[in-house]
Image 1 (cartoon, rainbow, N blue to C red):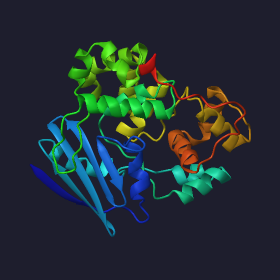
Image 2: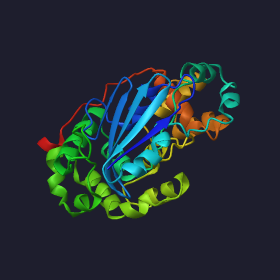
Image 3: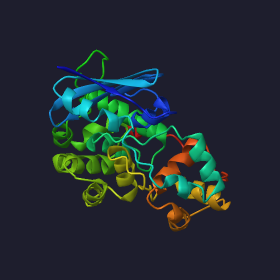
Length: 300
């Protein structure tokens, strides 16, 4: 089954910067992204599918493949970030010189909303308390272990079936570089994945996610910012973001979660968007200590 839809992005829309957050850094078995060309595999309520977004001039063409084609094409504008609502943000951004400058520089970047919780939750759990290199290595290994071929010609793999994840003994995740704590959080989430996918909005999803042992505010925010395009979701508990916010907004080299939220309060409704802009601008606080070492739990 194939479905097609034409989309008209706003002037200045940035295709690559908007969509790259949906994929793991470097190689993601579930998607690909190049200039004007994006693929994403997904498990939809209607079945497996893959979405292709192709940009030609000022127009996007969305093409869905497989049983989930219609569902993906109907959501294609949200996945492309075209439902992102910036109402009120320009006025808020104008209150701080740096934020205003970044908002102008990255005005074409939108927040995607995939409508898919469990797939993003896998990455978020694997990213807990480890380096990005470790997390992405584990993510790729896990996807390849559980992955089934996705519909369409792109050669993608589907995200893991939650039932398969829940039924796998925790020690089977060890060769992926994932220890028991993160594995158990992932499996608890897999057991309730159907209920998570039926959440009506970001607030409900956050409540359900944080009720699962091993999933806190940081993980929930990482998920809902992508699944729902929530512009206010702040990753409380992050190692770097409080320092970045304190340095960028107040010139303070170090910050706590409490200080970060205090500084972001004038941007309420778009606090997560401000954090994303700071990241897009490559802004970070001064570093005074050694980097966290890259480890391999599979070798322990």
